[in-house]
Amino acid sequence: MKVYYILGIDISKDKFDVCLRHPGQDHLLAQHQFPNRPAGFKQLQRWLRKHGVTHVHACMEATSRYGEALALFLHQQEQQVSVVNPRRIRKYADSLLVRTQHDALDADIIARFCATQKPRLWTPAPPEVRQLQDLTRLRQFMVSQCTRLQNRLHTESKTLARLLRRHIRQLDRTVEEIEAAITTFLQDHDELNQQVALVDTITGIGPITAAVAVAELPPPGQLEHAGQAVALAGLDPRKKDSGKSIRGVAHVSKMGSRPLRAALYMAAVAASRSNPIIRAQTQRLRARGKNGKTVICAAMRKLVRLIYGVLKHRQAFDPKYQGLNRAVPCAEAEASGDGGRQPAIAPPPVAAA
Image (tube, rainbow, N blue to C red; front, side):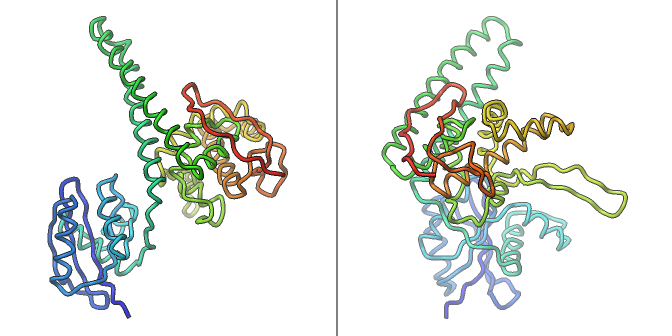
């Protein structure tokens, strides 16, 4: 029987601290620090062998992208890996009344969290999905930079405004190059191309937003229901009620993919006008006096459910579908726009209703 030692990992940009604990005993075995690069991963492997450890359950926080390479390395070495929300670690540390914070202590807290809470294991996305995610996230970053510069134009002098416009044009060209790369990439990967084309049939969603959704959401086969997809997008409602005096207003949790929420926002605005299902929902909510932000969040949630539906059933969107979840699959629907830039993507296969 394999014995999995507990390995807590505190990740930062240039280094990572580790804490090794015995799975059945509450005591620390060893701590060390390694550079956060492939050579450091090999050093970690040798360090574990030096301590007679062959199998570990490694746990780390989901801190930007600093830990992805290490998590992938450990997974390829057939080790158990968990990547958890940093809020869980912070709340666990608070429950232990921890008053200080430094990297070595954080690694120990993560190891104790792993030993007691036994978080679920992490499975990396396929390489092609990670590549698509890299492309779509880079495009979002470039677009956000372009937007920030455009917002500064009206406050700058003529000389500076001229320089800003030049830089904006350069960013626009870069965005176009990234979109062309996305198109080429999808054409080389038929399965992803079909998934993106299916999502693109949802009125209000364009090819770029469809590519973001496919890159950020796990395959529908890994989810039990559409509500899990909503939660992974960080659009699930969060409300606090306590006793008779506290009646909190519900907000979205935002404990999910920020790039997906950013992509869905403008899609929800377009869908509230052009998608008959979401337009009807929007009209109902406005008739009940809901504000604009609430209406858009509801539209974003509905879009995620529709995305889950077309991908799960592998059929195109049909606004007239009357299924249990109204998350529609059928063959006839027109692809909608995405605010300008749209790479050409192959149409989805025709499916019978």
